[in-house]
Image (tube, rainbow, N blue to C red; front, side, top):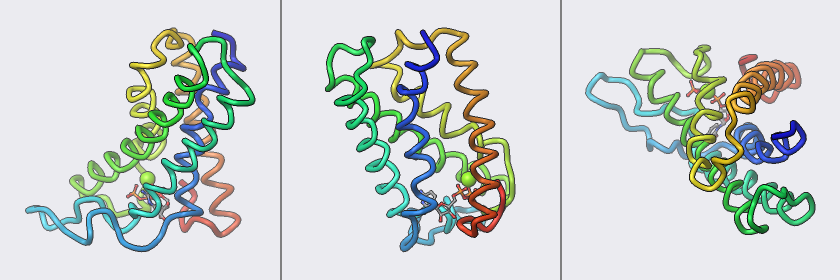
Length: 169
Ligand code: CTP
Ligand code: MG
């Protein structure tokens, strides 16, 4: 799989992961509830608006790409659109799952943890696998994981500098 196709393929996942920083806020997804360990299920950094906005933004970008930059790999625009939706849903799901694990470990929101950079891309790729597995060569997946890591780190530093995020990760 060539790099340009991989980048077009994965873009919805990145948009979905980044959008909540701008679109998030309001009620937390866990509605403030805690588990038996006395810690929040997900915490205040995972909001309903962030989740829905992230999935919507990633899906919208995936739809635009399906129309204007169709990938030969997909059997039509609808499949590429579906791939974008699944990448986005997986990204937000992985992000929330990472927060769940952090809370169980007693790490507060804002504390750095490896899942901050890895959860969204791993889950995004897993969710989209049923419709896009032909794109998943070993080299391609390793490339996307490495790229995501670097992008997530650098964009979060930038978001912090511009006052969009409290912490640079
Ligand atoms: N955000 C949101 N809803 C989501 C995900 C993110 O509103 N489902 C917004 C929140 O404003 C959050 C910001 O995006 O503060 C950054 O998210 P993230 O980096 O995941 O926050 P963390 O500080 O890492 O929190 P956690 O430890 O829960 O991952
Ligand atoms: Mg996080």
